[in-house]
Length: 263
Ligand code: NAP
Image (cartoon, rainbow, N blue to C red; front, side, top):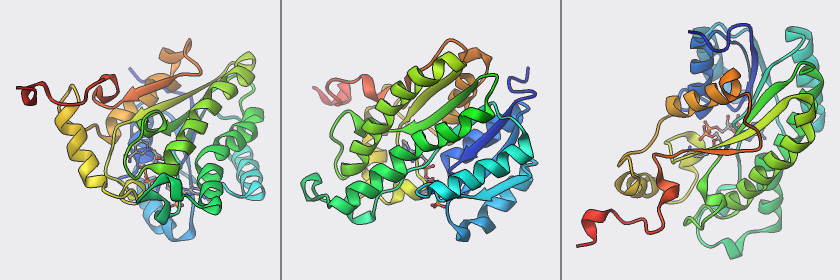
């Protein structure tokens, strides 16, 4: 059974085949969605185009989400191509590399602004731009991480940006709910991607989580994709303003130590 037959999805944040957004795009394609891609920098076009070709994506446009002009331009083009859309995926995050190592207390004003602008405010800007293209309702999904709630070494200002993203999810859900537009976030466990590689000690994070998570492993892009699928299909029709965890259960632990090590 195809869950997204007849639906149109605009996906932001595909950098390469390891991107979480690519896992989502593949799942949406398998379920019959018509998909458009937006990527952030010109250098990525050569990586994004071959992926797009694999799943029949015709709409591929660059958009730096720190620019209101580029966002307006992108949505004008999307309106021309799709008319209306049903789904918006925000899978975007960025903080200057030097902010993702060492202590949070050393965060610079500029680094804070950039991280919050690109990783959190952009969801607000994209949701506002998408609303007119969703006259019959729709579903918006973004990606977050547990470092928004608890201190994770080196995650620093990204944790603060993700906290803002999650709060924005609730405020946007309240604003757009009367138009039948649902807004949710997926809190994914650590996955090896380009963005993740920028977080100091990321390899250690992968090992630490896999050793302790109830499922004793990490999650992958396809598992995030399948959760995005139910959130964006009619299966998720009653769900909005939520943060849904796809983290092999790691977030439920109060004492994250594998029982076999307790003695
Ligand atoms: P990724 O493949 O590197 O994707 C990050 C995307 O953000 C890239 O496509 C990047 O595009 C885009 N981006 C950054 N700045 C941008 C800008 N100014 N304008 C437009 N796009 C911009 O890494 P990912 O891990 O899949 O990240 C996707 C999302 O999942 C992020 O929100 C991330 O925080 C979140 N997440 C990741 C993990 C993990 O462990 N990997 C866990 C939980 C949540 P350009 O490179 O072209 O700028």
